[in-house]
Amino acid sequence: MASTPGILTHWPWEPLGNFKYVIVAPWTLHSIYSFFIKGDERALFYFSTFPLMLWRMLHSQIWISFSRYRTAKGNNLIVDRSLEFEQVDRERTWDDQILFHGILSYMLTWTIEGLQSMPFWRADGMVLVFLLHVGPVEFLYYWFHRALHHHFLYSRYHSHHHSSIVTEPITSVIHPFAEHIAYFLLFSIALLTVTFAGMNSLATTTAYLTYIDFMNNMGHCNFEVVPKWAFTIFPPLKYLMYTPS
Image (cartoon, rainbow, N blue to C red; front, side, top):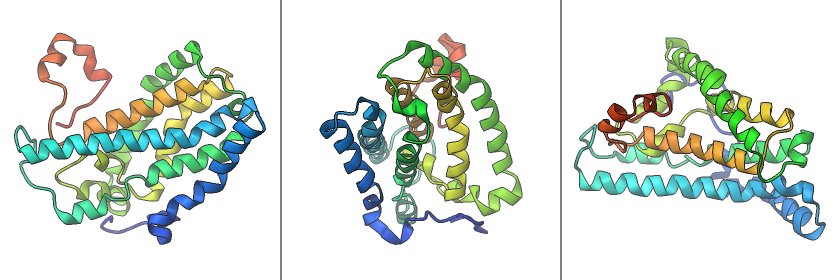
C-alpha cells in the first residue's frame, strides 16, 4: 500500500476475496446465451470478452512462471535478491485489473454502437491503433507517469507500485484502483478512437491489449529478455519497447 493512501486506493470487490469473479458471471452467461442461443452476430465482441480475459490471465501466468524460473536459476539478475513473502502477498491480486477491464468491456458493449457490430478483422484499424499509441497515447503516458512521481501523487498512489524492489512481470500492474482508472482512460484513447471511426475489430482489440500486457510483463522482469546487441543493430527498437534496466 502507498505510504499515505489516497482515495480509491482499494478495489471495490476487495471484500469478496477469491470470489470476486462472480461479478462477471451474469454478463458471461448472458453473452454465451446471446451469441450461441439467440444467434446474435452483433454479440461477437460481447461474447469474446470472457475468453479475452482468460487469455490475458494465461499470458501473464506464463510470464510469472518464466520469471520465477529465471529467478530460481539466479543468473544475470538485475537485482540479486530473493523475493520477499510480503511482496508476493501484495502482488497476488494482479488479476484485478483484468477483471476491471472485463467489467468495463461488458458495460460498454451495449453502450457504444461500434462495439456491437465489430468485425473480426480490419487492417486499417490495426494501423490506426498503432499510430495513436506511438503518438498521443505514449506522449500522455510519459507526462502522466512523470506526474505520478510528484510527491503528492507518489505518496498517495504510485509508491505502492515501487514497494516491490525485486520486480516481477506482474509488478507492472500492481497499482491502487485510482491509478488503474487513469490508465484505462489513457489507453482506451486508441481503441475508442478506432471504434467511433468504425474501424475497430476483435483482432485489433486483442492484439493491442496483448501488446500492452507483453510490454508491461517483459519490462518488469528482473532480468533482460532482449539482448543489448539487438538495439545496436536496430536502434529504432528503443522507441518500440522498453527494458527492465
